[in-house]
Image 1: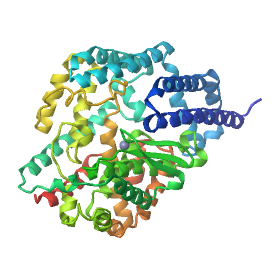
Image 2 (image 1 turned 135 degrees about the horizontal axis):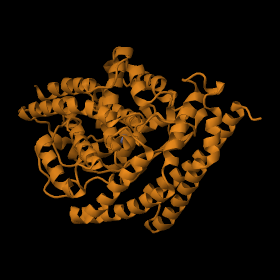
Image 3 (image 1 turned 120 degrees about the vertical axis):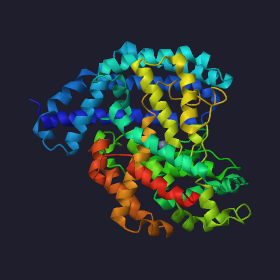
Image 4 (image 1 turned 90 degrees about the vertical axis):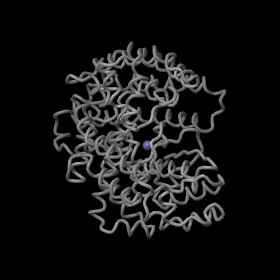
Amino acid sequence: MTSPADSYRSLTERVQEISLLVSCAGLLDWDRETYMPAGGAEHRSAQLALLAGMCHERFTDAVTGELIAAVESSEVVADPLSVEATNIRELRRSYDRETRLPKSLVEELSRTTSLAYGHWVEARQASDFKRFEPWLDKVVKLKMQEADCIGHAGQRYDALLDDHEPGATTQWVASVLEPLRAELAGLLERIQGSSRRPRGEILHRRYARDAQEAFATRVAGELGFDFQAGRLDPTAHPFCCDIGPGDTRLTTRYNENDFGDAFFSVIHETGHGLYDQGLPREHWGLPAGEPVSLGIHESQSRLWENFVARSRPFWRHYLPVLAEHFSQSLADADLDAFVFAVNEVQPSLIRVDADEVTYNLHVIVRFEIETALLSGQMAAGDVPAAWNEKYRRLLGITPPDDAHGCLQDVHWSHGGIGYFPTYTLGNLNAAQLFAAAREKLGDLDGLIASGQFGPLLEFLRANIHRRGQQYRAPELIQVVTGKPLSHQALMDHLRTKYEELYGL
Ligand code: ZN
């Protein structure tokens, strides 16, 4: 007879082999976004589709389910915080999610979203939502079916959220976002009433590409990113791709007339990369060695990007170094002017270009629209009007056309409904973790101002990275910070920072 311990071993071997296949797809995907010639697109899609099919088939095989069942409630998982219990709990969750979806629905979703993506590209180019509307309608209806197959306690959106943020519910997300929306609106109004304005042009002088790369690479390394186990390459849309132990890849794009574009995206992706490099690699390919959720992953990127690299102590340390790289462009830039310039608040139409204060309002617009679409209260055809009305109300600006409005993001064409809230959860998690680190480490500003990032990184390593999926996101934040997630820490951070900058 096979013992539960034997079954556990067979299961982990099986799952780690599937993870190896998934990481092969990851490398092909990275290559597609960086160096693949355009002519390779069709062949690459075929390679990726084959691998995706193989992974899905192996994971949803009845054998996987039998092995999970043989270990569940055995002595192997007696300690709920052990590596074994973590692996079994999260493999059960993924197995149930994946096997509840009929093959026909998975195929239909894959076919529809790959077509919808092409129609979204065309509709955005023409700035004509009408061309995308029937496809959005199809995607929403399929996502409703998906949610019903997976199961939920009343709100279909719960099932979709859970895919990106295990354990999160629509009601919980709304309860965190509603007070945030109200307080952000108040802060934005006060900022707009201030007569102080930063000299934003400092960032739009000439910044040579190679010098930008050299500076960003130096900073990423000094924050703790290990370039012996990672690299930085150019791409069109920056991302971080963790291939596996010893191989974490960052990407960025350079604009010689915009210093902030590449630099803050490199720091953002470095935050993701530091998380991946800090995971317990001995459990690679299993939940105990994987990141918790998108909202926790985003907290790591946002923490380094906004709480560290947009802070005054950070530039106290790095502005003299930056001025060596760009002596002409920065000849007249003092610390005050530079810090104010990298923290300019200006309501804008495009989410990815938004500042720290208005960013979350962009996310709230999308969350409100997605939940209304999924509950059937809003039809696809109502999206442009709802979008424009929400932008007018929340940000005080109205998109001139759909390309600058509801067609700007790729997510819905991919079927990525339920993804947007994780961006704001990331900001909230980052604020609460940074406040906890400040309490633990004492003079965190002093450490940053003297270029000592090790203590902060070690705090994140010990409390977040090395834990893998031991806790789900809401529990993890409670365990590390002693409080449930709320909007408080982020609002405290934003008020303190922007009241000083804008003299409120
Ligand atoms: Zn990110």
